Length: 220
Image (cartoon, rainbow, N blue to C red; front, top):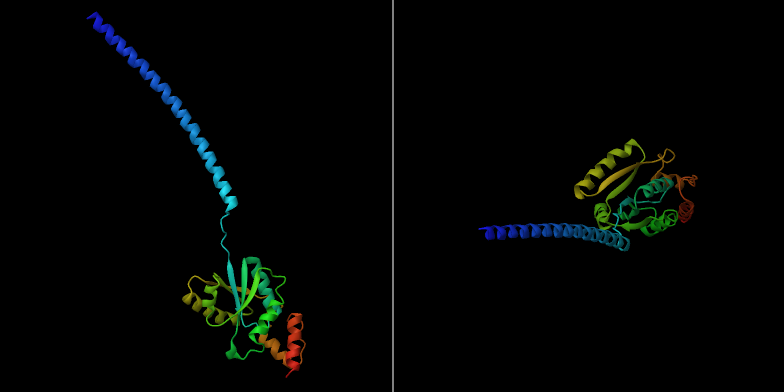
């Protein structure tokens, strides 16, 4: 019996020592795992930062369309363009050909007159287009159409057009810019009309447009 008890006590002691050994190993493994996990996380952080430097995320470009006949472009148009360039990443001046309206200048001449005034607007470009404005805006991946609003009388027409464009292209919004008080009574049509009667319109249009008007009127 005493021999059996001795053996049992020995087994208990062996089991106890084995348990302490397992506990110590567990603590060591846990510490090593934590240290390894920290090193992996740090390396992953460095890798992500390196990838971002090499391949920075693309920023959404906010493109707007500034449509009109621009027959011809005036200082009022340029004022709206200047303010639009401060808000949008890219502004596309969309020159409607509108041959049915018998324009004063050809689409090519209007495009030339606009382009000659874009040196101080590096984020602006000019293009001619036919057809629906909303289709052109979608082709250019624009999200906004901008229009100048000179007076309350313009609002009803612009309101109708904005609602129709929203119906055709729900993803494209219309933003109206209030013209400065110095330009709220001028328009391309009015400038042409008074110029035909010999009035000085140089303060309403850029120099190149004034020269083009004089040449066009003198040839008729």
